[in-house]
Image (cartoon, rainbow, N blue to C red; front, side, top):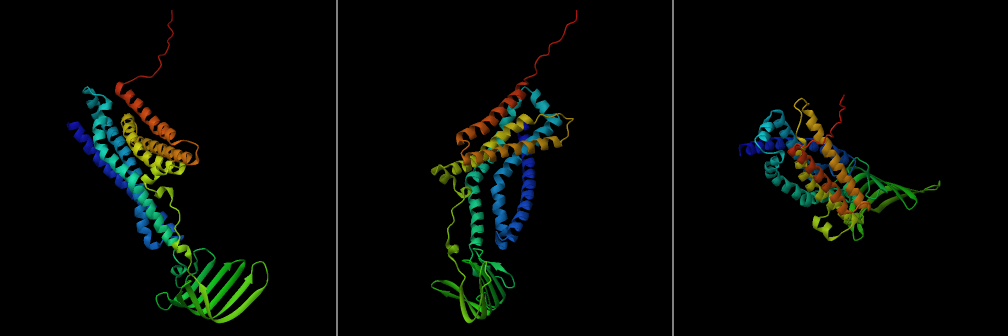
Length: 364
């Protein structure tokens, strides 16, 4: 049908343009935030592009759902203002018949959102955590940068090397400040080199001085040395931190039923169900007054989207804390929204009038 094809064509243009704008905005915000995290030492500066890409990929289910909702609202509202929907409704069909072409247009988008939510989302979060943990677990030797004070992985030691001689294996004018076991130690040396021993990596200092004091006392011990070895590698690089819930695969969440896993599962499934509900809400809410400003449609779309997704997040937190069961949350939120959207659509389809009749006084 000509109406269906023109509707899908306009939806495609509106959906594509909206998605590009939203992705651009999110990429800009993510880049600024990632650069700030890299400056604070949370990520390797060379991994900023990767982290930004994985973060935007994790946001894609939300961005696609929002783009579809805005595209439906904008397209149908424009058709109402230009009286195209009036002609369509006057041809003997109701408002509910618009759902058929919208669902044919939207089902591939539902599949993309489901794939991103159930498969790509945990993978993206896992890659972000791997990059973060890999940078945090780097050895103290890898942290050393010439001319900069660098803190060790456990925060108990500060290094300073004026310059490197050969590929970070040796340096000159070395300074180490250590706080450990109730003692503060400051060691300086003319030069140092890295030696790998069975016990780990050691920084071998030459021709230096060592000052040791007990915290809370005035005692000070000064010693000079020709050769002094300080261990700089720790087992933190081989540590395997526990995986975050948002990095677990969907099958793992289903196999290990816990409150935290059910909360994460409610979020992933909720992204899919919310996208479907947004199509029905878009059809029901698209009837507008031509005299109303066009920005009202966009404000309504954003307001509805924010409320729905805040309820998703709130339900996820309640499930994780045990305040709400998984089935109750899914049925109450998504089932309730679906029921209200269908009733709203049925009201527009059947032109139901819910106004109470007014009693008029008949004068004698």
